[in-house]
Length: 485
Image (tube, rainbow, N blue to C red; front, side, top):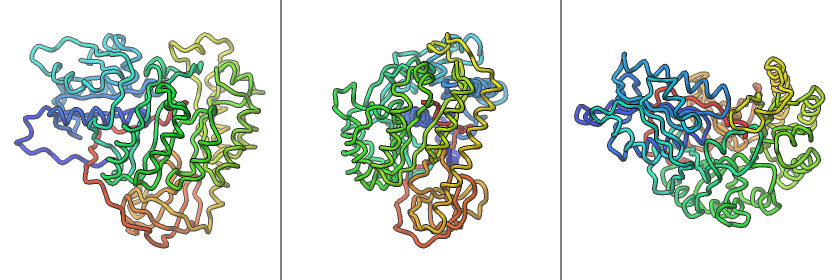
């Protein structure tokens, strides 16, 4: 996640309590962090990018899979040391891990002063003040019922590039996937009203945002809880009236995909021809054990239907390997499906037992080494497919959005075409200086390097306004990826 450094506050402003923040997890967590940061600034706190100078350190934790949980715990322990070596007086764990394990975190991690669940983000400034109060040394829990749902008027301090923003359209999930703990941590689905989402989108556009990334736990199910028929289609029809260049939806469940939705995708220029749809597996037996709707026949026809309706669509999906009961035959079936379908991008996750999910009690667990071997085999297979598909771009002139100077080399500019989502899909490298971040330009692709493209600029398409807001630096900005929704 890209970010820029905070300006050191003046002496006059040092009286404000200082907050250091660590954002872990997926893009949905990032929005939660932005909301908490906005609430803290509105509540009179001063943000700092220097962990040692922070009086309050907040870790927005991730709890979806085992690797993410361990990273969150390690971050708490690491920043707990600042109570001795820095200015830290209060250490808070917020977010998914906090919601899920609650009192266990306080018991096992005595350096924590407070645990704030996913239903209490709106009270974060009040919580910090209470923990900073004299004699407020007793550990405390804040665990309202999830999900907290912000609205268009909620303050946000956005992280990352000013020209690209995540827009959360709903919270929680009504599905019953056997492997997933999201409903435990985030509750049942709750959709924001269309007018609230559109109002926020318009404000973001006024701030210079050119790319809106729509996120939720179950995007295609948007509006069901509000009684809106084909709610996601209705939302997209309103959002395309907003003055942004790209609208990119994420996390579409492979059910309820109507022709009307695909027609909107195909017919609206502002909606990127990019489809993110985690399929999780293809074996009928595995899908049934996972409590996923549909079967191989349905999923195969769905992919074919999407590609027929949206010519040139960039298709990203995700699969889980090592789900209890997955045999060599199931894995070979999955591997052959990936070969046959030739997706543009594939993420592969290892199954892990998650407390409270029905998969924990299933028999025939798969050995860790076997899972890792299967993941590596699929990733190697997909790398070849993606590189081959990238070669179709050679010699083509395409539109790209400039993101900024590359971390690989300060001589290169990183950009993305509409089939490349921020942070997860690869980049287009160009010569530095041909465009500023947030500008669109026309480039001709000259080479392929794995998941990335090399290109020569043809010309800038227009000059885009940049946001006047400053993106603050987090103490340790990290992302664990999209998770296996």
